[in-house]
Image (cartoon, rainbow, N blue to C red; front, side, top):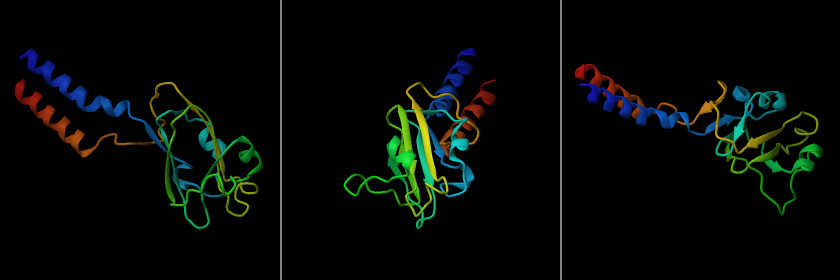
Length: 161
């Protein structure tokens, strides 16, 4: 009887524990998204970004876009030249954070960066992820499969006792 409970407990752990270690998708700007009138420094200040996490930029296009820039481009609100990179313009852009260090993003539409503050700087750490802040959107925290599997294990435990 005890071995059935142990097997059930291990099965439940195998099903649910991978969701804890998953990377986090951060919706830039939270409910407001990537737009003017949002203090992105304030939005980012209580978040810890890790390698493997992702930023999701949700916005209307036109007028908005996303450019990844360097520190100078961020400070001066200068988009990369035409020979560098094209802007992200889908309105639902996901950028995986692959390396540690500072990352800078701007909107290059009209005066959105320089005058309206539509720019974001974050620092990505190489450390293992901590629990995600409540405002972060979890990847697949409890998929239908995981809930179903947990229910099956629960029924198994109830019958085995």
